[in-house]
Image (cartoon, rainbow, N blue to C red; front, side, top):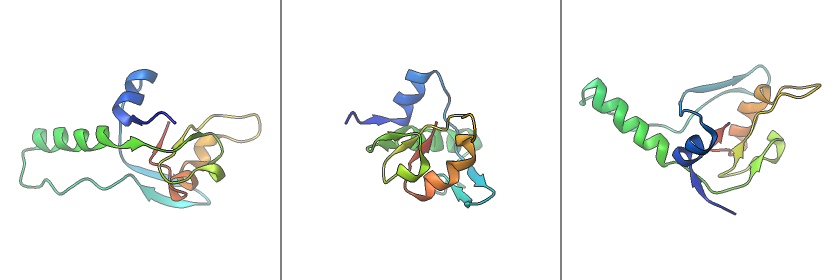
Length: 102
């Protein structure tokens, strides 16, 4: 198993990190890992600290394309398929323990 942070994965894939709510019609809504309260900081400092918190999250489990196989520390790669779109199962993967969705 190769352990990577979300910042490293974003750099490798050419992506960008965002946090927010993952929703699905059947699985409900799940939010990304909480970011500490930074209400006493300026907006710029708060965004910088939240970004550092997100970048530090580490994928310690497998990369999976089936949300049912997601577990603690995994990364769910939401792929479009012929009969189903993996994006529809992002909330289920997070509920099963995935730390991020690609």
